[in-house]
Length: 224
Ligand SMILES: Nc1ncnc2c1ncn2[C@@H]1O[C@H](COP(=O)(O)OP(=O)(O)O)[C@@H](O)[C@H]1O
Ligand SMILES: Nc1ccn([C@@H]2O[C@H](COP(=O)(O)OP(=O)(O)O)[C@@H](O)[C@H]2O)c(=O)n1
Image (cartoon, rainbow, N blue to C red):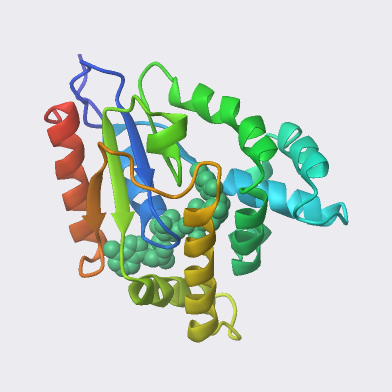
């Protein structure tokens, strides 16, 4: 037997790692790092909603046009995540609008559940992974940070590509999106009862990753 190239999680339960939290809290960064560390596939579910929103806008429809949004959600191309336009602040705000439509959430359910059902386990990050998509996931993290810390992180990220990026605008957008995501009737942003809260306000990326690993290993068993 060769040496393993990634850590193996004790396979008592399917090692699904569910990561939820508000905008720019560091969910994706942790999800990507955890997936690489444990050799699991990762799905950034926010990209699904971003792709639906951009598809609706491309068709010239309104973001609350549910029949169009559902049709787009059902026909996402396999390479939908490759579009760099999905990573903009506008796409995030637009995603939050289509994400409030129950038909869109229903249309995106199967692709997320199928991903989570990979026999070796999976990492998914979003808003409703621990509550709706994978309520049985053995490891659930709810990643938070202050709105100011999150705006500062997103500002640094966006300013590298867009010199016109404004911290104040990003902070306002983040606050609005948090409020809208938490207040919506369907799959609101709320920690699952059995999620462990990880506040990264005062943690760097490496510290947050170490804390997340400790939570996962407590829930799933020590990494080999
Ligand atoms: N603990 C942290 N400390 C500082 N910056 C971070 C931390 N975690 C993530 N970041 C940075 O903040 C930005 C948003 O992180 P990301 O993982 O994309 O958040 P989310 O997926 O929750 O929107 C990225 O530029 C990322 O590199
Ligand atoms: N599982 C998910 C993921 C995203 N979303 C929605 O999609 C928007 C964009 O999500 P995202 O995860 O890409 O956003 P960031 O946290 O990266 O800014 C969110 O504001 C939510 O409204 C959702 O409703 N459910």
